[in-house]
Length: 562
Image (cartoon, rainbow, N blue to C red; front, top):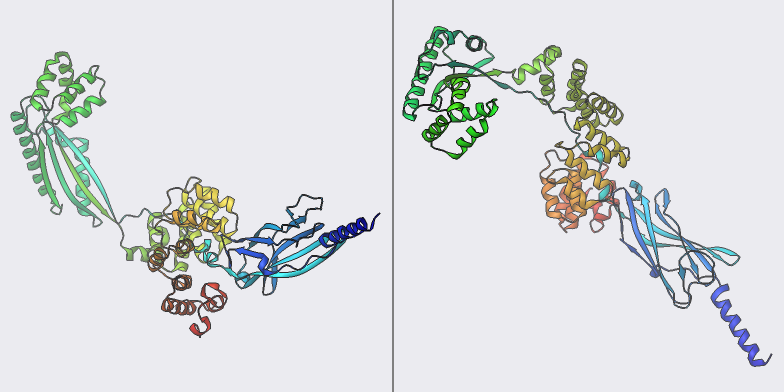
């Protein structure tokens, strides 16, 4: 071998040693970018993407580097999935980083969020295998902290669906009786006044007059003539029938000493074409379609009557079966049944709940804002009406609001057993599933709760907790809740979030804290100061959270809350 050849061989060996055998240098922060930075909670995760930009002649050809992201916080750390990259001379399936040109590597990061991560740092750990050697490069800090505003959303903040009562203070009842007339006559025949309908009507009027919880709101008389004959004649006939019926009722009410009956009204219809059409449609007359066709073709009442009379054979059937039913006066009594007052219901519950109907006892619970008192009432309702799903559902609602999730779950399950098709228990069991982080079950339960008023808040919260902020905003709609405001803040709709928080009927510490977050994001010092102080007054733990919250990194929180 010549000297020149020997020199070349030594040079190549030296290059190989440079590219392969020498240990890798430590990475620097400049090699990495993190998106987002700071990290941010999405749903219940902390996701991010770390991008490594490896310079030329840095990554050894025979090296394999395993990068493990760690989120380090006081008292612990959490590891994300490790990712491996290799040099071009390594036999393996990992992404390759070229020695001569360098390259780019992408490392997905995801952690399950816990509150301690609010104050944290993202580190990368490097384990290197190079030939037969294994060694560790220094850990490298690449990001600071976690924005955790999304974590302020919670299923516990959703109001469960109420199985509403059907209590009505005033229930209107109507009683009616018909007086039939002979053709072309307006006099009332004695037999018509002793019919079963008339006896029952007069009985209800007398009983309502004597009952302090019933009032006769109105008595109405509607009189008719059948649509055969001239319109002029039928008009006078229907009016006479109205007058005679009204005279009868005036005398009957006076005789029975019924003086308090709201008002007595009377009207007449010259020719009852609507009634005629309805009876024909429901009849078995063979050519009824022909008759209905005539009615639709001609609007003038006298022309209609002529055309129908021209159908000779058909008209005979009408005269026998249909027209007699259209010569009548109908007397209708509108009677209001007056239920117990709020005070009477509350007194009855205190004395003996069994004297209340299920609607009354469920309504009783709506007369207080005290959750413990509501729970007592619904417990009693479930005891006295154990077959009504609403009693257990609404009991579960109060247990849920009290934080007794185990008891609430049991009550909601009983409600669902009593009425598997009822949507309220399904939605509420969906909330239980969310609290237990079983989002697949929550999705199924919420899907079976269509039509429930509270569903928007529950669905919006479901989407928030599963990381779909845009879907959450859509599901919340016009819901006024802390969770709805969180979704609007995360999608940067700050004006709407402010409006939502301002409309919450019973603001709590979270409401004011979110308003302070809005102040920080819109550079409103006064908004931050005022609302953080109010939040801390309602919940002392707010001070510690605010001190670690990157939302307030540009504010002197200690000074605000001192």
